[in-house]
Image (cartoon, rainbow, N blue to C red; front, side):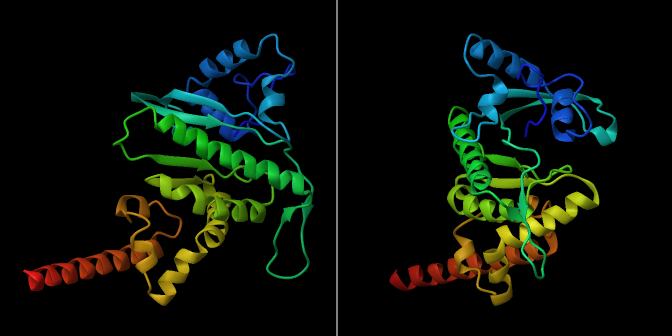
Length: 268
């Protein structure tokens, strides 16, 4: 997520303030400037700047970086140069506002939503664009390789002021439409206590139907929908419950395979 721009509207890649921690980290750790410079050349002579396109309230653009090179480690480690730089495909976007108006209904539990429908529509449009753009880029690579999408908690991570319940609800619907097209989708919510609290809240809304299967111990609908790879389950904010779900799914798959084998033997 991009939130800092130069006065003329180009993406800021130098002297990015600490308040835009995610953009600062990407600017320091990758060759993002190669793609922002290319975008500026493409837009030269046009009527709109990169900021106007990326942060447009309607019909926004996204910046696709097909071979973004990650050559430095995380801030917590002092941004060390990596022995083996990694290449990833990245999609950058920007929200129309950094401080939208919020609607906080009375009662408990406390929830927060966009006060203006246009803000919610803008968020949904960007999530859909990211989903389609990421798939389009993946289609140009090795079709056999598993595709993992790391999605930023738009507007909410790293001190963002957008309503987390609006984001959670949007991602719940986005998951039904796009998640099955990827090997795994990881929602990055930031580090520290704030990041853990955000991840826990979003998880409870986005994966509500998944937790329902845990309580009812009915994993039949989950078995065909995902691989339940322990490698990814251990990264989850609620890894304990998801590992239990994975075990339920694997047991059900084993029983189903055993029954199929028995029927095959009877037919023979």
